[in-house]
Length: 257
Length: 329
Image (cartoon, rainbow over all chains, first blue to last red; front, side):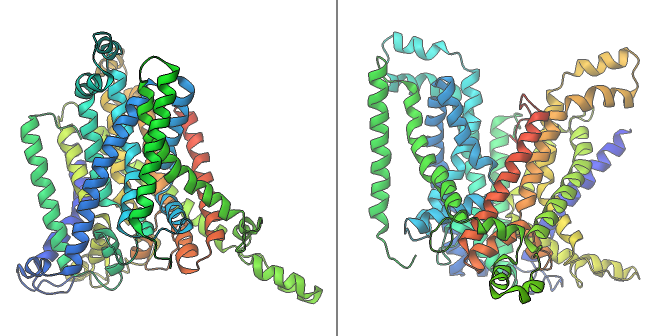
């Protein structure tokens, strides 16, 4: 097959993936409220965005939960990965089963099982329960991105450090951590992204009083989404794009996802 | 839920429990070996997962096997098989003259089969579209791989609900596609609120999850194998069928897993693009819990869903015993 045909095919697939995004960004600059009719270019929705209390609150909830959940999951998951890696075969298999369980469970079942837990223990659903849920589904992803790095590492460096008199905490921070840091960073970014984009699990673990962007969008999807939400997502999209370019620029050509 | 519990109080208890577990595990591991064992670092995670994954799953099991009063029953599963179960029970009690009214309700089973069918179609379409894409991405002559991976990831940064809603703008009766068709002098078409629209939304959302694992397995392949095949006289088709395809099977399998599983349980896409005309298993579960408030039946449905997924996973694992398919990363 010719190079041209291959490129054309890939362009078509990418076109399919980007069409809704282009539509979204166009709508955010539309002066009118109608979805399909173009009524002129304006920054109206961007201006209104910052006046909208509900959206600003949801944005705060989304971002703060994504940051806290990513940090906690990274600490919890990295420690766990180090522990699991050092375990004997049986307990290791048990821990891996427990790690794989939430990843194989459908989101809706994870969300519902947590909703049952919180209701069963009479814990009111809201910000904290959503945060706990996000930490829960993020941590396995951190473990799975840290574990391969631990497997690649030379087993004996840690023992050598201990033999040379380093306390375990020192050896952990100065021997193991530097070696596995690429996995830790990948895991943290993955956790942040997953948390940012989650809808189903948040939907079941929060109350209508505390909404993140996804549940807010969901509650408005049927009555009609205001262009302000499009404006917000266009801004977030551009922010992430800028971040990617900075990271890419710094990392040179290592464009690994 | 009505009870207004003091949040910080139980949070403190939770963290005390975590801390206690950490200490206990620490003491055990110090006693069993000289010095702290590294495996003890996993203890906070172990406690966390028991609290927030194992216990909730057990709770689902508990609810699915009990009735509203908490007594043991299998009715919830019978309800899945026969959605008229409770009404039929009533007819049976009312006497033999009502027996004619007893009719098995197939709503739940129908929805399950419909979801499986839609998920199957979605997986097939994703594979058909995604395999060539991954294959061309991995093409060494084009040298596009890593750039394209990023280009496939970027759309996923836009909130997926908003992206799905954006399709409404395109597909509506007054939407962009219909406007375009009409301006070309053609007839508009009903594009929304049907299976096709739901399928489109699903393929749109899950396609990258098919492309990435296949791409990864193709790039891991040794390029020399292809040269060897060609030196030995195999043509392009032959090389692909005998070398490239078999080597990418782990990627295909993890792609299938990553598309099929979320498709069966998706519950936002059918609601928006299907307009409530179509119901999938995810919607059914959500409906039982939040609309009807029937946790027992809802739990039974969730459990059935989980078992189905575990079975299909173990079948897929058999095809890829080493599990080298890799993930999205």
